[in-house]
Structures are given as C-alpha cells and as structure tokens.
Length: 142
Ligand code: TYD
Image (cartoon, rainbow, N blue to C red; front, side, top):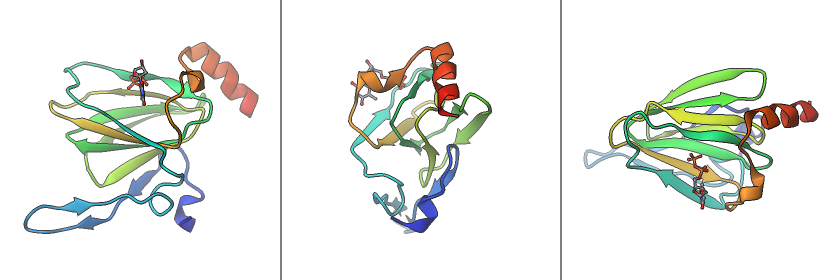
C-alpha cells in the first residue's frame, strides 16, 4: 500500500490524479494506491431532491471514501468527540471515513452525484442507526 495512505484519519482529503485534456479531464482511482483498502463495493447517490439529508448512521467496521463526482454537497462527520462539516465540490478529491464515525450528508446541489467506495459489501448488521447507541459504542473503543 502507498505509505501516504497508512496514517489517514477520518475527514482527510485524498487527491486523485487528473489527466488534463482539451477534450475533458480524466481522473482515476486505484485500490491500495489512492484508497487505503481493497474496494469491495461502489455505490452512488443521485437525483437527490433539494433539502434532502442522507446518511445519519455509523458503521462498526466499514471504511469508505466519499467523492463528489458531480455538483456539490456537505459531508458532516462526527467521531463522538469532534464534529466537522466538509464541503465537497471537486471530482478529483475523496474524503476518507473510518469505522465508528457518524456521518450525514446535506446541501446537495441540483444534479449532484455522490460516489462512495467501500471496504466491504453491504451488510445491514454493520450499521448503527441510533445516535445514542453510537456514542456508547464509540466510548467502548477509547
Ligand atoms: P443507507 O445506507 O441508509 O443510505 P444513506 O446513508 O445514503 O442515506 O441505505 C438506504 C437503503 O439502501 C437501505 O435500505 C439499504 C440499501 N442499500 C443497499 O441495499 N446496498 C448498499 O450498498 C447501500 C449503501 C444501501
């Protein structure tokens, strides 16, 4: 794995390569090189209506990288101690989120697309959807 990836913390920005071209820019993402885990799943949010909020949960194990493929939105991350709001509006940046981090997304621009690269396949059991439970579980990890 690329050494730069070994000390990433939640909320850190990962910059992907950009191949500039008059015909349009091209970016690429390689597991192990730009993403600190083997990518097992990609999912994306689109056609998000104005004012909608997504997320509102944490994961026991899942790690993710969130990318604004098009348009913009805000990502709010909370580890039980600190809360941060990050505005995403570039296709060549990703925000890393570790396990045990409460995340919310809002402020989606019209036509925006949010792509998420994930370290595991979908598992309902890996979700914590109750904020109080999340705080209790987060304390156990300290
Ligand atoms: P959820 O993760 O709660 O969405 P968000 O965090 O973006 O608000 O997922 C919404 C629904 O989609 C839920 O019923 C689970 C389902 N889902 C899958 O089946 N596979 C997936 O990879 C994801 C992310 C969600």
